[in-house]
Image (cartoon, rainbow, N blue to C red; front, side, top):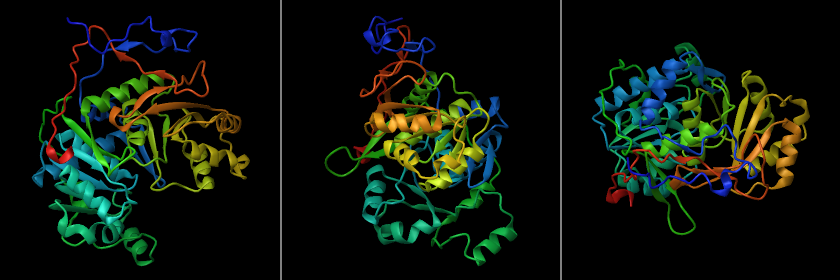
Length: 413
């Protein structure tokens, strides 16, 4: 078999013990050629009763998540959505976001996550850029963000959802919560109710989703101009999750991934959602950045015996370290490790966080176009502060992987 063009010679200096390369991590690996939908299916089969998502005090197992994904995928298909179509998600971190993301993956539909803080013109730009055919929108976001530009939008199918739609509330509790104003809600004209998709009998069509098929369009602004759509294939996303899982070799199924970062961003998409699903972890999701007291209490209360990993930007770790009441929460033994990205990690922040939590905080580097993780410091081993760590494992020399050239359309250029 021909030598893989991405094979990296193991004599390179970063592979040495002196550089800190972990002995437990292979230097070149055979990358998996499967879809994101297949990854979830495999985890649900292996760990059906592990909690897949914790959200607002409610838990969903991998068996339940896989079933919900099948139901929503069936509903999408019944609406005429098919492989290659684009579905946009205007949702916070939630059960619905993860469910819709993997439902799209299962059908070969391209998913694009929208920033809930965008202004109407910014949302319209994204919908037009990617050619979105359908939009799943949180009802309370519709009026201010979507409605002002709806007449100019390419979207033809609107699906509304309330934050409680997958929270297992009884009809009585839902009614009382709405009447008392405890459950925020708002009308979305001419939209399908997401709960109808959830009520659909699970019978998704069998779609042969190829590794090279586009999985997601992620908006990235770079340094100039308006945001553009980065094109990521299933292979891109699955391979990066595999690389990351190898780097996290001590993390066990049942561990938690703290989901403060928004899932529409590539950092959280991979380092919270896709890694978490691949490794059988619990996604601890927050719909918006929490106050430090809420964050600390949730980590202490929800973290399983296997521990938690915390992906975040430096500012999160700085705020937690400087939180005056942090000593009231026994974080030691709860947070196993944390990874800082989206900017430099400075030594004082790292040292303060590690002293308080007794965990390991390492810096990583990536960019949206690379799915996104390129390199990271070892969590267990030598670290060189002020650098972006070591490059992740590359394809092995006998790999049959060919360069990925996802289908592109003019709308995503």
